[in-house]
Length: 239
Image (cartoon, rainbow, N blue to C red; front, side, top):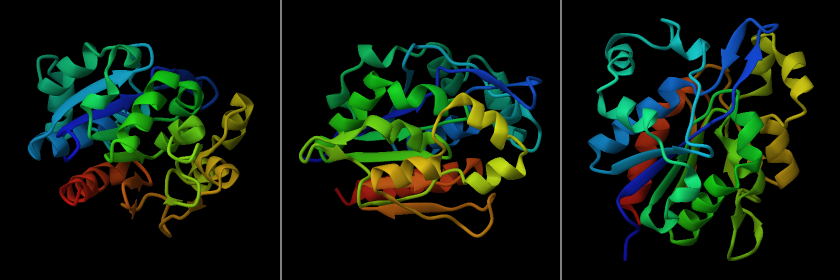
C-alpha cells in the first residue's frame, strides 16, 4: 500500500541574530511556501509544524529579492491557506507521523540551532522513511538529519547517500561564517561529512539545484525549494 498522500513541512522554531546583531534569522519564508504550493497543487494534504509550535520569520527572506509578487501577497494575507497553517502550527509532538507520506524540512539559518535536537520532528521523519515515504529538505534543512536514523539499520538515515544543502562557500559570501561558528553548530557540509553522506552542489552557490537519491530528496538553497518539491512529487508517484 502506498504511503498517505499527506505531507508535513517542518519549520524551525529557533531565532537568532546575524549581520552583527542587526537582523533576525528564523524561517526562510519561501522555503516553506514554495513546497506548500507545489504539494498542495499535486493533491497532497499539507500540514506545517515546528518543534515548539512557533516560528519567527527570517529578515532576509522578506526582502524583495526573495519575496515578491504572488508570494508576497500570500505572505501578507493572514487568511491565506499557507498563513493559516503557519500561524496555527501544532507542536510536532502532537502529530501522528504515520499519517504522512512526505516529510519536507524547510529552513533558514536558525534551523542550524534547533533542528539537530528537534526530537519530535526527527521522529516523524524516521516514521515517514520507515513506512516507505519520501524524506526531503532544502537549504539548511539537512540539519534535521543530525539525529534521524534509518530504523531498519539503526544507522544515520543519510549515511552512504548523496545530499545537497546550503554551501559553506555561500556562508562566506554572505560574510557570516564567523558568526555562525560562534553558534557552535555544524554547517550542512560538515554534518554530511560526519555522518558519512556524500555532499554535492552546483557550481554556483545560488543556482537552482537539487539531488534525488531514491526516497531522499534535497535542495541546495532558497532558489531550489520549488524544484525540490516537484522532485518529491515525482518520486512519490513511483512508490
